Image 1 (tube, helix red, strand yellow):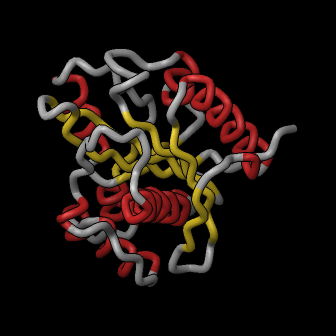
Image 2 (cartoon, helix red, strand yellow):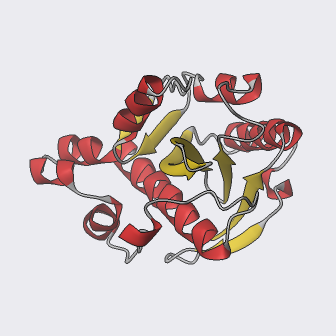
Length: 204
């Protein structure tokens, strides 16, 4: 069976000491390979939770389109719509996001899905779970519903994860395919924090 450690990219160290490999998806063939490796790793480790962070960035100074960060236990992939992915989802990603056995966890994830549909982008996730809502329900603390990732991590995980700053809330298209390292670190952190929160809360 393949191992997700075959992903290629930058190594990012998390606040809990975990080292993640983050690969940017630049071509359809890379997307298919990464999705296959991630799915095999999830089956191998019986871990059906994936952290999902959606960032909206400006493409060609016209429209805002999504950048997906998908994180599992030790690795993350970053997928930017636009370029080779524009107006449609490759079948491999579509099947992955629609897999009923995977819980995709993130903050405001349902809002992001609705926004993509309003913008005529086919981002559909069969089992999307908002970690703020989940924390409020599982821990019986309604105030957690409105918190962001950083505050949720501090209260639920008791770890000092730093979510990306407001300046990093948008990743702008600069005419370059590749992201800068600070963008990779920020996007990876948010997706990983969502994963850790989902793992803990869904385990109650």
